[in-house]
Structure formats: structure tokens, C-alpha cells
Length: 199
Image (spheres, rainbow, N blue to C red):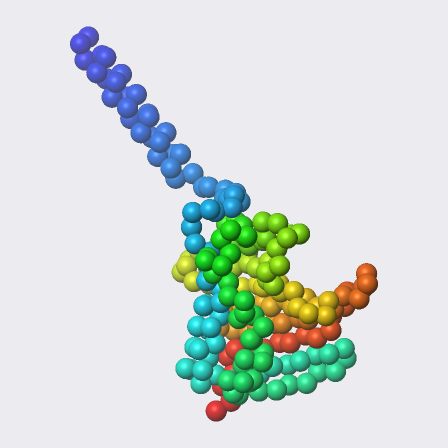
């Protein structure tokens, strides 16, 4: 009879431990996280500069296919000047924590559809924020923790908006939108291969 309370105690502890394990191993559904005020923003400008430097280091000569209305033309980005012309608009102003922590929000979530951790950035106050970049997203591969894609939206002069999608190590797409009155149309579309070595 004296062993009976001990047996019950052992059974209760075992049951509690099993329940804890069940909770710990249950699949988690990731929900959006509110704006992060403690961490650092992803250094987008530094990352893009590193990607461009990697192209040069590996001897890759990107080819830029430019479509304006129904006309398509191609050109090699075979010099620093041509690469600057193609990518320079997205390297300035600098996107980093020091510049933007007080005027932009960062939200993080796991996008199950894309199988990527997504970091999305928007102005705290759209009306008073005059930073040229209006929005950007960074997609990180959950398996290797490497950046998979970056998407940027930038306000440009003359009622234009620039959108760039950079698929790391593969391709880049730049779309120039022009708004006149209530009408917005694609003024130019560029598709740049980041893998072509013509040598």
C-alpha cells in the first residue's frame, strides 16, 4: 500500500513529460511578427553590391534585354559604366538600419506558399516619408539561410516608379512604370541574365 502513492506520482510525471514532448514537437504555424524595434534591418544595398562584385569576380557578363512598347533590344553589361547604368538606381539611397530604423517598419513571417522567410519593409508614415524607396521585401531560404530574392519599389522623377526583382545569382527584372493622371503604364521592362559568360 505504501508503494501506491509513489506509483501514482511516477505515472503523473511520465504523463506530464509526454504532454510536454507532444507540445514541443507539434508543427508550428508561423504568424506575421509585428514591427521589430530591436533587431537590425537587412543591409539590402550592401548585399546587391556584393552580388554585382561577384558577377565581375566570376567573369559573368550579364545580358540586358530591354522591351519598350513592342520593341525589344539587347545589350551586354560588359563594363563598370554599363552595370552602374543598369543597377545604379537601386544602390542609392542606401538601405540600412542606421538610415531607416526610425522611419520604416520591418515585419517578418514564414511564407508557406513560397517556402521562404520574408522580411517586408514599409514607411511608418507614408505621407511625410520622402525616402525614395517606398517598399522592399527580402526572401530567405529556410533550408540554407541564404537570400533567395529581393524586391524593391522606388519612386523616380517624372511620375515614374521603378520595380526591381533580384533573383540571387540567376536573373534581375526591372520595370519602369509611368503614371499620367489616373493612367499607369509600363514604360520599359528589362530582363537581365546574371549567369551568362560570353567568354
